Structures are given as C-alpha cells and as structure tokens.
Image 1 (cartoon, rainbow, N blue to C red):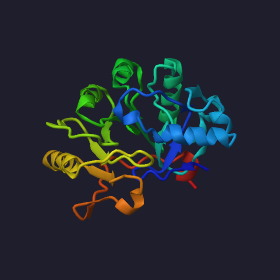
Image 2 (tube, one colour; image 1 turned 135 degrees about the horizontal axis):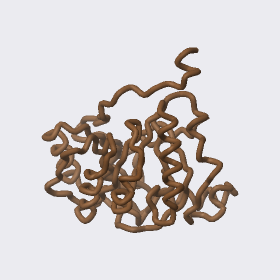
Image 3 (cartoon, rainbow, N blue to C red; image 1 turned 120 degrees about the vertical axis):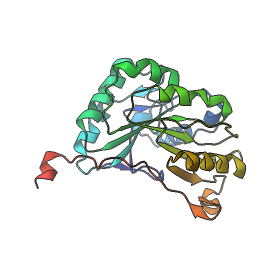
Image 4 (cartoon, one colour; image 1 turned 90 degrees about the vertical axis):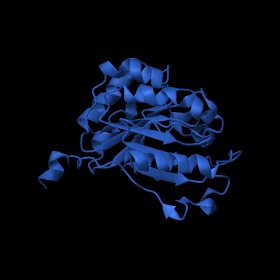
Length: 248
C-alpha cells in the first residue's frame, strides 16, 4: 500500500530521504520538523535521529511496488536537493521515478541553486514534476532557476505565503499553488498577496491551486478565495500502467 497523504494537491508521499535544515523564512515553523520529532518519540525507526538528514535505502524502490497509478509527493519530510544528500542518491531516486513511469512524481525544493547545477545530469521523464517554494519576494530568484531546468512540468509552491511577490513572471511555469501557514505560531497571510498571484495566473493562463488560508484553526478558515474553490491542475498526458495491470 502507498502512504496516503492529506495534502490537498497530491495523493501519496514517498520519503527515501528524511530530515532537513532551515534556509529561509518559510522554514521557521516547519511542519515536517514537528512531525519528525513526534515520530521519533513514537519510536519510528526512520526518525531515530529526529530531523537530521537521513537516507533510507529500504525506501528507494517502494513506488515500483505500488501498482495503482497515483500522484506522489517526493520527500515530503525533507528536501531532495539538500547539500547532505549525495548526488549519487539523488540520481538513484530519479532512476526509480523513470522506471515507475505509471506514477506522477512531484518534487519540491528550496535549494534551487543545486537543482539547476545538477539539471544536466538528471533524466527528466515526463512523469516527473519539479517545483520550488517561493514564500516571499526574497525567494523569487528560485523561479528563474527552475525555469532554466529541463523538467517537463514546472510548478511553484507559494506556501507558506509570507509576503507579496510583485511582478510575478510565469513564463514557462505550468502550475502555481498558494496557501497560508498553519499550526502553532502560524504567521498571517494577507488576502491581497493571494489575489495578486491568482490574477497573475489568470493573465498567463496558468492553473492555480489555493490550498488554504491557514492559521491555527485551518479547517475553520477553509480554502475558499472570494467564495470560490481554486483546485486547478496542469493538463498532462495520462500516465502509463504497469504491464500486469494493462493486460489484466
């Protein structure tokens, strides 16, 4: 069975790497760090070192055993392009994603410089979606790094949105997610920051997904923007099926 996810824009998670370190404002109240500490306290083996970066060989080929095609968020508990993840291990993860071509894989990083540096070495199959987190104007340079990669589907996660991002250029971007911070210590998000992103998406014909207003009581705050649910996704080809399913 796959690891089902409660994240609105994906279906499952796959964590061959866990743990991370903070590099920008969006990391301050990291949900993955909180969850890792909780799992460590529960005795979960993959989190024996808490939120330290750890590689999990036994998890590498997990998607190959998931026969039902699904959308999979890669390393929801880490950052694939963290400096402590060896290049060889990243290449092996890409090899699995290429082999498991009946799934769609979504990768999200804040370390766009390393992503761009490794880009020529990576095998960008059409089923691999690549995204960067852009939480405020200071992080907007990550968009240009992403744009220069050879990923077939490129997306932005503007969550937790901590400030306005002006003059948002979406050339070559296939999808934008936006949302407020949730959980303890959640920082507020202004409506104008979100509507500015939505309007840029409408102007550029880019699918827009509004994930949440956030806050401590995120369910009560909901995810409607000006009375409307925005759950658009990129239009991409239907994924393949494993041979044993295709001919069943």
